[in-house]
Image (cartoon, rainbow, N blue to C red; front, side, top):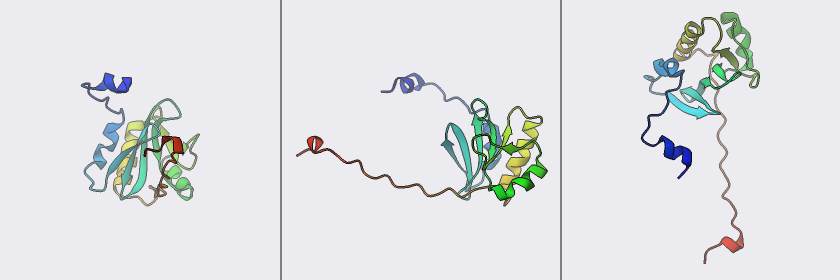
Length: 140
């Protein structure tokens, strides 16, 4: 058994520091929360809406998953947003921003109301090809 896993058995899982942000979305029947590159990704109606990051900068805040065509409109409404340093196709609100809690509450409310500027449809996952076995490993 993995050593890390063995240490966690019987211990409660740590609560994500931004869990309170996606709680208003949890009552939506289409809400799905998935892990994505060390963050929590919130989906509504199958669209990726928001990513909640709790790592080190530039991964500590909220990513708004949107098309670049909506950046100007969202930046006009939320001037503190900026294209993410690594994923510039999405806008980023760092946790250190002034009024982070109030602004994220507003952004989550926009997602809940299905603001058409928010959300991207994920590309379908590619099916994995079965691993090729070497003849020496084949069982008779």
